[in-house]
Structure formats: structure tokens, C-alpha cells
Image 1 (cartoon, rainbow, N blue to C red):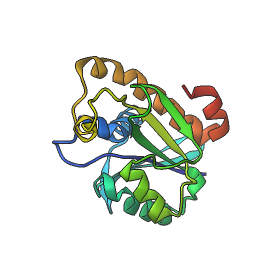
Image 2: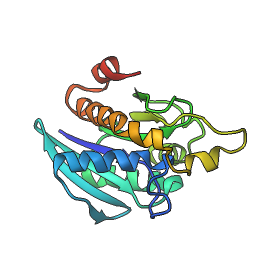
Image 3: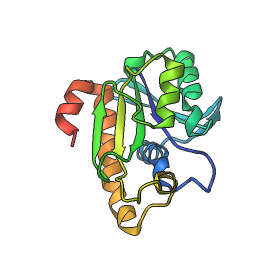
Length: 186
């Protein structure tokens, strides 16, 4: 069984530690825990490892957030992984900081990375792990907030939420989405 876990984010040092890059940060932590390195691949940084008999492929698209679907579509086809075996890790302002919700499908809810995946991969029916980044910003300042750096308190708490997200990813690949949602969703 093969799985593809996609962490959404933007490439470049100016975006590295921003809220919008929580997908990248989570996959970096997962790769570290599995002892695997990143390679530069077509449209994405890639990594892979074996876990409980599964081949788990990780990608961090290098297309920038708004064109993430290009990388997702390419790697799904390249690795012949069906939509139900992909998992997209995405930041979500509608969820309190550090809370995690896995869904089998759903709307993009205004997230440009998810919109592009929907457009290029054929709809909303793909699993996603929504990583809460909170909504502590004044009206009209959402872009500055999501592209802003984490507060010190968030930095202190982030590893715990990322570790839970990693547990959810591995659970998704081994016991499936339904049991993972039941066990882990906040």
C-alpha cells in the first residue's frame, strides 16, 4: 500500500516559519523522526519511508501555495496513488491554534492551495488534515496573519500539535481515515 502526504506551504526563507507553512513544518518534523532526508524532485521536495508495511511518500510542493495542485496532481500520477490515499496538511484560520481536524473531503473554505488542488485533481473528495492556526487578527488582516511568524507562545506549543498531527498521519496510513477521525479529531 502506498500513501502520499502533502504538506502545504511556500518555499523561501521569508516564509519558512510562518503560519501558512505549518504543512511544511509538520512534514519536516515527520521526516526527522523517521530519519529520512529530502530530495529535490519535480515540482516538490520529496521523501519516503516504510511504516508498518506501507510506503509513505512525503511532498512539499515548490510551486508556491496557490499552485499546489500542480505538484499534487503530478505526484499522484507519478506514484500511482489514488485520491483516497493522499492526505493534505493545511493551515486553517477557522480552527483554534493547535487543534487538528481530519476530513475525508470538504470545501476549500477560501484556502487558495486547496482550491488549486480541487481544480487540478478533480474535486473536493480527498482527505485533508486541517491544522488550526487561530484567527487572532483584525478584520481585513488575514493575509498578514497567515504569512506572519508564530508568537513565542505558539512556538512553545507547536511541537505538541505537530507530534499529534504526525500520529494522525501515520494512523491514516495504517488504520484508515474513519478510525483516525474517531480517535484524534479535536
